[in-house]
Length: 175
Image (cartoon, rainbow, N blue to C red; front, side, top):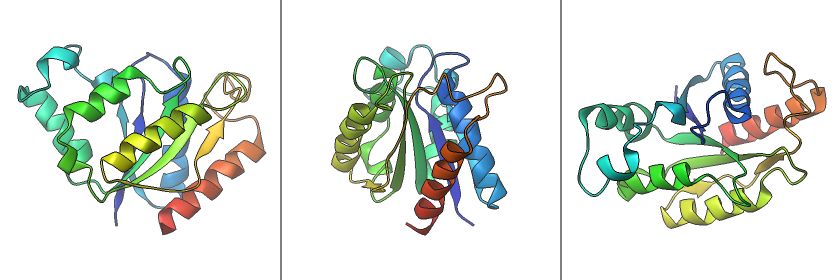
């Protein structure tokens, strides 16, 4: 069975993004899907200068091999940063050889404490992923007021939100 990589697209420690990523991981596991989370807190601190333009540490090469090279499906959980997506996500995408993204599938989840669920950010990201020749699943899910719809344990308090996430995943699995 195919494995899905959930990308928690911020390096902010203990983020709502990571909690939503774990919810997606749990839903996928409940559907007997192999899944792993790439938490951007695991990225090297020197990624901007030490892991780009032909320079690559053994540890970063191993991370890319583990999460990107052989994976075909990705779920990007993307928080809103200044009306778009985090710079660390763009830096990560830029640090990986573009050929490694070609013909792979992406599902996008926007996360925001505001009311728009990072719609603008996932639209921006869609353009970049299309440029990288990825296939972006049409059902992009904006999750708004994320800080108010999750409990202290990192679970949704709204069954409607959880059901919407499950429906997005079901569609992406068929994609």
